[in-house]
Length: 189
Image (cartoon, rainbow, N blue to C red):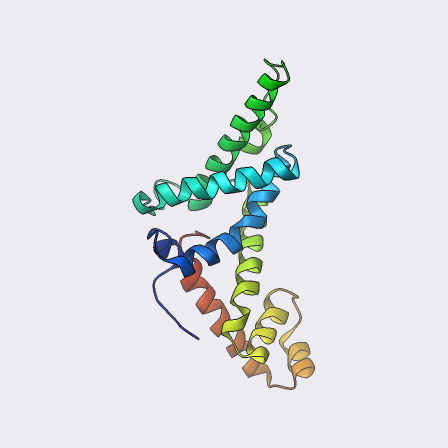
């Protein structure tokens, strides 16, 4: 396992870090599709929006400075995504000869600090990152962490299922979660 203290968010600021961008795209593509479809776009339009979001991020990330006092990465990402969705919907309305209708995205933009939205974002990013990072751990280590953190089994249940001690289960979870926190620092804050 290659461990680096540099976070994924810091690494994607460099356009030439192909590994970081591939991981970032794998983590965020399903979430961006979900947001786009939630904004009322078709599968094809949602795929276009995802591409536009990543094209925007390639340009903007080198200047991005993570600052908790100015806002969160997820709020910035959501704003970019929904603004592009809004632009796509306006183009469609013009092409169809419609206009002046209520903004279908208003509810999605209402509150970036909605606890339900925050929880969904965290769970989604953690789950995707864990799936992607699975290959960086021994199978039992990863499975113990997954069962405890994601499937919410008790340490005793995981211990029995995998044939390892309960303390080994906690150590496995700790190792995986520490690596996730390193990798995702700034993306979950």
